[in-house]
Each structure stands twice: as structure tokens, then as C-alpha cells.
Length: 72
Image (cartoon, rainbow, N blue to C red; front, side):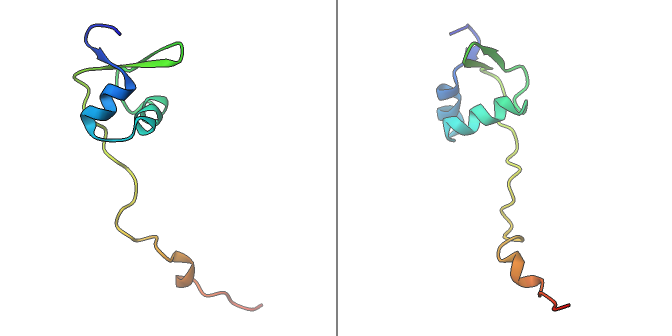
């Protein structure tokens, strides 16, 4: 690969996450200066891991039961 850049697999191992998650981050533009060459992504070796924006508070667990259905 290019000097100063890592592959998706290397980045996933470095950040301890799934390679598919790294690909998704690249596709969404969440990793600055990541470049795509054909089907492969080149990620700068000094790139910071983006913040995980998934909801982990449990706020949405069983959200349907909070809203009662009304008969009209």
C-alpha cells in the first residue's frame, strides 16, 4: 500500500473494531483524508478513530410499549 496509509484491515486491528465498520466509516466520509483506489480504501496512519454515534443508553429499548394504542 502507500507510505503513510493503512488498509481497512490494518486500521480495524489498530482500532479494535470490525473491518466492515471501517469501510462504512470511509463510505460515510467519517474518516478525514481516506482515499479510495478502485475497491480498496487507503486510510492515513495518523487518522483518529471517529466517535461512535450509535445509541447505547437503552433509551429506545421497548419504545413501542411506551405509546399505548388508542381505539378511535
